[in-house]
Amino acid sequence: MRLLLIEDDPMIGKSIREGLHREGYGVDWVRDGWAGEQSAKSESHDLLILDLGLPRKDGLAVLSAIRAAGKIMPVLIITAKSEVDDRVMGLDAGADDYLVKPFNMSELSARVRALLRRSFGRADTILVAGDLELNPQTREVRVKGNQIVLSQRELALLDHLMRRPGAIVSKSNLEESIYGWGEEVESNAVEVHISNLRKKLGAGRIVTLRGVGYRIDVK
Image (cartoon, rainbow, N blue to C red):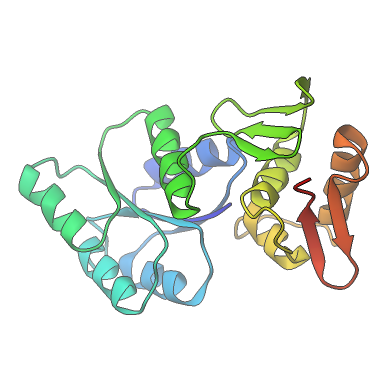
C-alpha cells in the first residue's frame, strides 16, 4: 500500500512515517498544502493522511481541490481542531475519517486499515486466497493453518497482491506500494521478494505473467 502524508510538523510527520513503515506501507511525506495537492493529483496513492493547519494552502482547501479533481482515495484528517463543527466541516469537504491530535499510533494504524478495507470493498479483516490467509491487523500469515514468518517487505507485497485477487499487478506498481519517496530501490527488489515469498508460501502461490506483472493464485 502506498500512502500520502501531508503534515508540516517534522516530529509528527517523522513519527507517522516511521510507524507506518513498520506496518509495511510505502509513505510519501509532503510538508505543505500546495505541494501536497500537486502530489495527490499527479501521483497514485491508496490513502491520504491530511493535516488541516498547513502552510501555503489550508488542508480543507487541499481536500476540496483533490475531490473536485476526481480523486476518490480515502482521506483521513489528522488535526488538533477538536470541535464538532470542525469535524463536520472536514467530513463535508470529503474526508472519510477524522482523528484528533494527540493520538496513539496504534489507533492511526487501525483507522488506516479500516479505510483501506472499505476502499477495497471488504468488510472482513482477513484476506484469503485459497488456503492462504493474511491478517493485516495482527500481521499473521497462514498456509493451511500453519503460521508463516515473513519480512516487512514480503508482508507488504503479499498484502498488496491479496487485496487484488486474480488481478495482474505490474512490477512498478508493487515497487510504489512498498517504497516511499527517497527510499533506495534495488532494480531486482520485487523479484527477490517474490522469490522469497514463493519459497515460504509455495511455488504456485504467485503467478508471473512475463513482461506484464504478477497475480496471486486465488484457487
